[in-house]
Image (cartoon, rainbow over all chains, first blue to last red; front, side, top):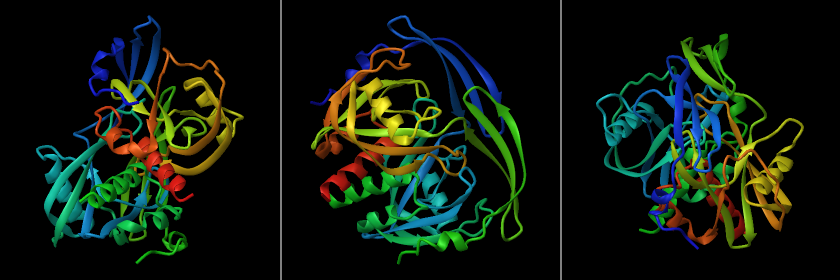
Length: 190
Length: 190
């Protein structure tokens, strides 16, 4: 029923015949690559390369049953969205340092206990971006100023009430939804 | 504890002062926009505009306890990934038609019962992309040829065994993980 983890090593990766940069801006680089699959098929692909060191998405637990969400403007979709705090990993930071800085900037808390629980891809077919999910517990009030253009609204939410979050029209981010389920499952298992 | 759904209507959206296209390729368009927030702060943003009509991610249930996953090469991250069938909505298709076509191409089944259960955003801060999650039930064998460069491996998985899927190193996509939890929750509720 399930594959061994080592199966991926046995599958022959396509050969990269050629790569080139099609466009580059401050935030994005678009790359073209020609791939030759094991069966000889050659296909041109475009993919998005992220600048920087990846990102963190933090699940900050105010107490064992309450997660702190934020409501901020999301320029990609042009509306306010409710989700978990997140941000880019800066040069010289590791994953947990970035997570602790982001929650201090976005929700006004630091965490004594930080744990990297999983990494998530966005759209692995055409984006190389990687987001590290960090569980933050034992919070303490600590505010750092970040680069947010306006004050961020912090919204406490019961972790056992994900269904009513999903019933809203402004909580749509796949990464936040996946991370909330992952943490609920993890904390329920003890 | 929880906000009313109408709250989002009351929050004043930033004003778009200017937009311009920084780069355009076959698959992507990168846009620059200057936003003025309610407090007067003006910030330049870059965002990725997708071409086309959005995408579908399908949760095909072979029987009430078994979901069909696929293992295919993901050019964005450069490795084989295990996740749900997905693809772009073609011109003239609606969401359910696209979902039924994608599973015929990728897993060799059509579905008599298709239900759009939710839409997900990828990275709402800087990508406008929208993925529609479709639950597909009552499958029947039906193969259509698609644009896949090589045969796709189909991997049946027990819906009650998400933990062992998450323990693998090749099942990382946030959308697939979110959709599996959503469907498990939905089917458990009856």
